[in-house]
Image 1 (tube, rainbow, N blue to C red):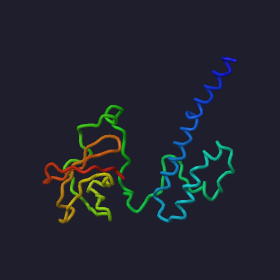
Image 2 (cartoon, rainbow, N blue to C red):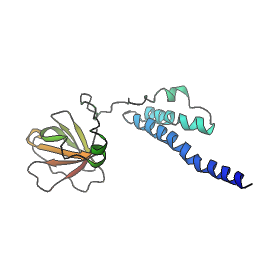
Image 3 (cartoon, rainbow, N blue to C red):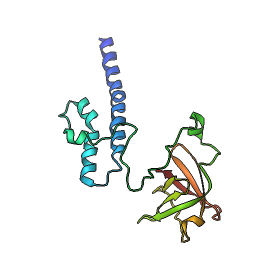
Image 4 (cartoon, helix red, strand yellow):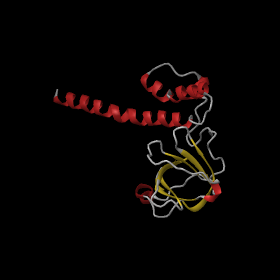
Length: 179
């Protein structure tokens, strides 16, 4: 009897562990749909990305028209803001990825262009092809008004969080992510 309770307890504890990789797979698939501009097509791709969870739960499969829209791992749809020519970001090693590195990703690189969203955040394309978007949670707003090429940018950071600084704006840092 005691052994039965132990087995039931272990089975219940592993349910979350089994679900997590599938949830991760579903969310990864949904993220790969993010570059689709058309809302209806994006929604179909989003629904198609849930197929692994549907199979796990014994639900009816998603229609093939939806599952075909989900790009395979490592691929994705390029959105209008994506820089098609930028090389993929490579790992700098476990310690550097976790703790960050003092070596900048960009050091005094001129801007190619910048634009502001309705909420005041910006997207910057650098002359080296790197593109950064300001985090929506950042409380600092840029007040740039000169031609993009006149601004020199330094970017440092770790993993997917970066700090962008503009030469000539001492003490001003922007929290950005690479796109």
